[in-house]
Every structure is written in C-alpha cells, then in structure tokens.
Image (cartoon, rainbow over all chains, first blue to last red; front, side, top):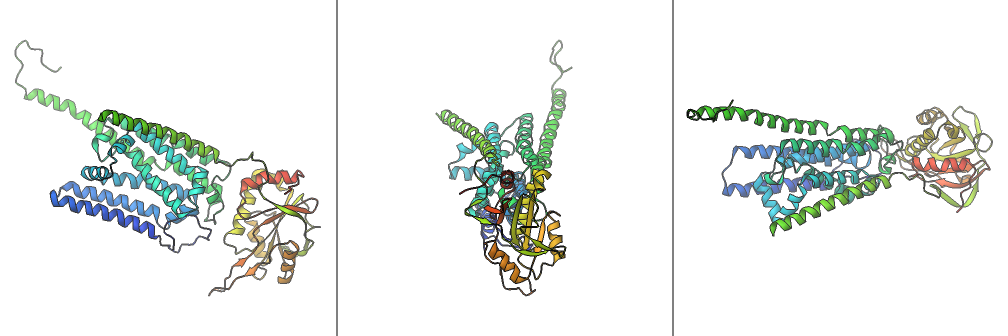
Length: 290
Length: 216
C-alpha cells in the first residue's frame, strides 16, 4: 500500500486505492482543529459565528481530501497533467481559502505564537511578497523539472501538494487573513491584488503550457494513457491554469467590490441622518450640507 | 526596535520572494525540452548489429521479409502485443507524435515494424486495428510461436515470456521494450528503450535519415 499519490507505471483502472498518508493528514488536521475549539470553549462562551467558521473549515478539509486522495490524487500524481492542474486549483483556490476562512482570529494567533511565526506570517501577508512568492511556487511546481522530479516519488509528490497548500495560504493572506491587521484593508487594493496575483500572472505559464508544441512533462507523456493523448492532456492543463481560477477569483473580486460599494453608498445617508439629528444651526452659521 | 526587526523580516521576505520568482522562472524555461543538446537521445550500441533476415506474415496475410520488403531509409523494429497495458501504447504513441511533428518528408522514409509477441491473441485483424489507432503506415507482422522466437533471436532481443493467466484467461506478456533502428545500410547502431520521448525522436530521426552513424 502506498501512503501518498505519485507516478506509477501501472495501467489505470477505477479500482479505489487507499493512501494512508492522506487519511492521517486529514484526521490530524480535524483532530487539532477540534481540540483547539474544545480548549477555547472551556474559557469562552459559544458564539453564533463559531458554526460559520466550522462549516468553512469543513469545506476546506473536504477539498483538501478530494484533491489528495483517489481518484484525483492518483490521476494527477502520475497519469494526467490536466488532473494535476485540477489538483493545484483545488488546493490553491478551494482548500486554502476555506481553511483560512474557517480559522478564527484567536486560533490563528495561538498557532502562530506557539510556532513563533507571527513575524514571518505578517511579512508573507504583504501583497508584494504574497504575489511574488505564490507565483514563484506556481512556476516552479509546474516547470518540467519540478513536476518530473517531485512526482516520481511519494515524498516529492507530498511535498508538491503541501507547497500548493502553503502557496494558497500565502496567495490569499492579503485578502482573507484570519489576523485582520496582517491583511490588506483597501478594497480597491485588494481587487487589484487579486486580479494581478491570481488572474493575470498565471496566464503566462498557462499560455506557455497550452501552446507548447510538444509534451513538456515526461511523467505524463510516458504514463499509461487515460483517454487523452499527452499533448491534448497538456493543452487542457494549460487551459485549466489560465481559466480555472476565474470563478473563484472573480467572485471574490465581486464580493469585495459589492461590499465596498455598499459601505460607500451608505456613508452619505448616515451623514444626512446625523445632520437631521443635529440641532438647527444658529442663524448665520455656515454649518450645513448642500 | 520592533519596527526595525519588522522591516528586516519584511525586506528579507521580499528578497526571498524575488529570488524565488527568478529561480522559478529559470527552472521553467531551462527545464523545457532542450533540442540543442549534442549527442544521441537513444542508447548507442557497443557493437553494431545487422538487420535480421526473417520472414513473417503481414496483416494482409502476405509474407513479409524484413530486409527485402521495407522500403524506407530507416527501419524501426519493435516486439510487443496489442493487450500491452503500458509499454507498447506509450512507445507507439510517442513515436507517432514525433513523426507527425516532423512531417511527411521524414515519416515517409521511416518503416515502423511491430512484431506481435502474442500471436495466439493478436489476429491479423486485431493487429491491424491496433496499429491503425496510431498510423495506417505502421507495419504489423505475425508468425507462429516458433517463428516469433526465431525472429527475436535474430534481432538479438530476449524472448517474450507469457505470464500466468488470470481467472478470465487473460495474461500479460513480458517482452523486450526497445525499438531497434536499422539504417539504410542494414545496420543498427542505436536502440530506443522505453522512456524515449517524442522530443528525443525528433532530434535523432532526422540525423539517422541524414546518414549520421551513432558510435559508442
């Protein structure tokens, strides 16, 4: 039995294969999360928001499990470049943001303080660092040498998956940081950051992969075939890299914009209300809104 | 003091991120298929081997002599079987991709000969259908078990071994995985083991057709 999905030279079939490492990771994350809530509730009362956090975290764990385990993990680990890219999308644009949204501030502070990583986390959450680092991981983990060397072993494949998860945390840290003061506060800035970091930059390697005239990855070129030819599979992978993040990124941008607009449009109403509550200005006073 | 430390961490993080981007970009570009690398992509034989003189039956039912009936400037010979789950489809697929990319000028000068190592299951029709999935120009040959063994001996490859059948009567065949390249002087100086990529073929085939002789 293998503990993590990696490239194997075996004909593909739909017989489920167990990966003990995936289950242990998921169980470990869930156990740690539950333990922290348990300890927290001893000291603090339960809030309505707690359930929201838990639901989001459960969603993140679900996507983490789906991306890592059979069949997506197996297919992406050694059969299809397109599924490898789908895994990347699930880690970066589903699991990572949901895990962050499911982490309350007290928990994030507690974890970072225990690991003495608060300073590092604040530094990684800076937009310039986040955009550079997350896209450096993206490029390195989709380069032929990165894919072929990491996917050939279980440990390498595990490292790649964890890099994607970490890269997802870094990518989203300026937007949905559990520690509020570590993230960006300006709504237009967040929209521009998301567009640059998650929509625009990945177009470049995505285009390179899509329009390459030959198969870039020996892992997938020399894998037992699962329907697609190596080149078509690679082209599909490139398209997924270019377009796969669009629903999440543009939805996030839309939510940020809508909230910003709502907040902004409420401002004059409050001001008018405040003026109406004020006593009538003294005669000759210029204190009035026109 | 805390601000100074914060700035230091921030600057180090930015520096590391920039370095990571540069290294990542370089890794992506540098690790693409390098088509300018010197040397041969196949495995050059320590001693040249002459083209084997055997006659089997092609998928039309006609006798086919490997030396006399191949008309191209380069003959590629492989032993395999149509039920092969990995080696054969991958090897034929990568070769086909390379021939497509190289164009008709190259493809028309190459004879790809696939000899079945499993003549009991690989009927002429089955063999033809299988090869047509890659190219209608690929030549399929079949013989009796004895003829097949003799052909393998003459080609200097290990004889295929039939493994035990499963409950459904299906069985795998262990067979030589290399593709042997005989140039137009009837001599093989290079073979292509499993793992040869389309890019490797695209580099070596034009050189072999141009008459370059690989030497150890």
